[in-house]
Length: 629
Image 1 (spheres, rainbow, N blue to C red):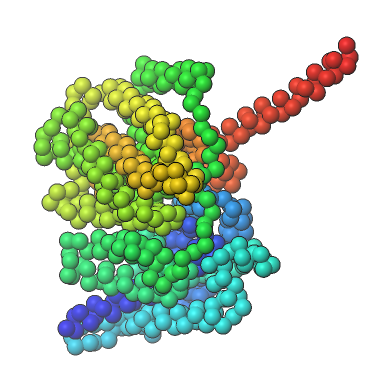
Image 2 (image 1 turned 90 degrees about the horizontal axis):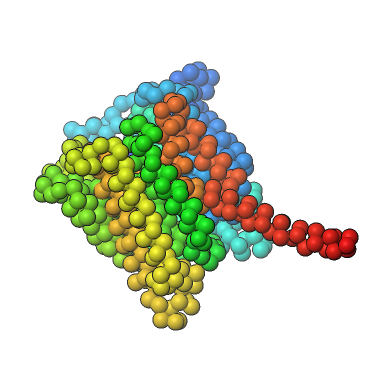
């Protein structure tokens, strides 16, 4: 019995740190609607800065002074980020904000390695809490007891701040309806800055308080951000009490899941998140929010089929790409194959986002399912490569059919969070079902057959399938189904009034996108010769979002260009510099700030402006000529 009590208390200690980080994200997300993927980076910075202050300036500040000063210092950095970067994109679609904060996360990861080095850093023990307390033969670290007390204290302080101050009333009002708060004359600019500063302070404090418990490393940002998103969604956006209850729930599930359900311990948290989103989309303690800004894709102008000249240009580009094996070596052909595969992956997500108006945060699940489908068919069933490529993506189709049925019942950020939950469930299954998937050891030896084994042949295969996927998706876009899907995206009520079953249409689009993503995963398995759980991880889902947004979500060809630019730049930077994430992150942030429509969208806008200016000048020149005559 004592062992279970100790395990429960350990869970409560972990919940305290998780609550600090999650409450900060909940406040920021609830008020500013910023999908702050960089929140984990601020958590990591808090740990690194606290380590430096407690180790090198312990005489001047002391341990606890170093913890507080570290959190304040990172909060100042957060204010600068908000003023310089985020203020420029508050009115952009939420996914562009995700893209900007993702780029910021990449930069912070490399900066942390540059400043503190790649090795783990072990902090000193907290003064006064270095020992343990005996509890019926079980030792409980005294520092854990301190964290258990700290959690409710912080909750009480935040409750008083939000319930008993005018600033807190404004924050709570902005959480429910920002437009109404602005109509009342409140200066939203400084309200958002103060909220962001508080949220970053809490995240950094949570990271700083972890140094006596865990080693500080440059991967802790991505490790914590997934759990924090889960806590925020379960508790409810903008609800501090919800964040506290959800943090306790998640931490205890982690603490006892490994004991009671060791084979599905990682899945439990995401199952709870999925159930909460299906039953109560706004969270346990949240409230239904006012209508959010329009989803990217809703402002897309009516698309038109390619003109004859544009078709010739596309064919010419494809012919030039097909001629690459005659002038390039094996390495470039392998890179070209990978780019072609990610073009397939990106266009599948682009179809769902741009045509369907559905932004998925877990699209890598179907990419990974397609990869595992091929690996299992090839290794266990011994099927030939052609059969595997035809049947393997069906696993992605089945996953999309099951998950999409529940996901399309929601919309906006709740849809995105549910897709993330489903993706993490699939990842957890692949990670823990060792007897079938190999766990983190993966499935090895998935090599193409002789007819496709050479780099040139596999490149032509990948390029051909990529071109076929793009053409098929374009045909669907301009089919009656595509018009019905766009009608559902643009006006659900009107489309329903004319007899369109919007949910069925969206579910079908979800299945199509998942199947195409599964095809990309199947090719990727043969390219790499192996499959791992990381093939369906959150980082790959974010990569897909970056490709789509980088090229331009409101354009037809944006996903193709975005995938080519992002993957080529990523691969080239890795080979050229040790600070590839820093450069790539800066490039992503630059694109979001300077070219919010993406690469293709910006080029199209420039061409349209040039045509408009030339058409406006021509009549003037004509009139002058006529008057001269």
